[in-house]
Image (tube, rainbow, N blue to C red):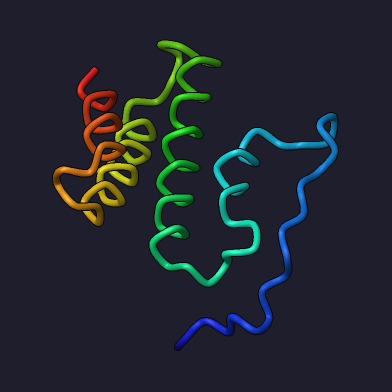
Length: 97
């Protein structure tokens, strides 16, 4: 089934006090919601930010299986980018640690 891009609502920036932590990952999509490459990058950034936020908040008190699943999701998205892509290289380096 194909996505119905004519039904995608415009993404307006929320007030700073009302913004959720993933907003910066989506902000690049404003006015360019139909750009597939940009959408993949936004998804990658959101998944990576979620993983980093969780590690910063909980530290070592994270279920290893859950952490591995989140890391695998980021790696899967990284696989969609060209191997020499700078963002891919930076996030891959982060996942090594």
